[in-house]
Length: 133
Image (tube, rainbow, N blue to C red; front, side, top):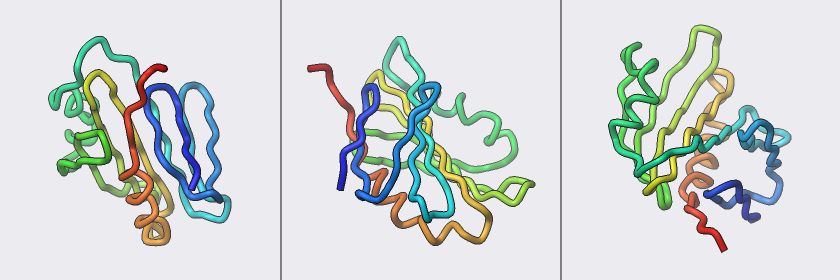
């Protein structure tokens, strides 16, 4: 396993996964996989609240997608699971830990999600908040 750190968060990945960062978004994927995991950490001025997370998920919530409460490593928040009209399966997480906000998405073609679903859960369970120093 390798540790991937970006900004004020980190997680553990299997050695054969690739990490790329562009425009403050970390994209993680297996070269022979079916989907990709994207993580961003927008800046915040204060502690992240549940209302903040629900606000960020507003578009999906307005479409009737129901959130599930989650705890992943040092982070707590909500998870949404849905399919879009273009044949894509989505899992999205809106998470906070103190003043750190994470927006995470995993997407793949509908019907292929079971191939990596378990590994995505394992990876996200290792989320930790980083401190300076």
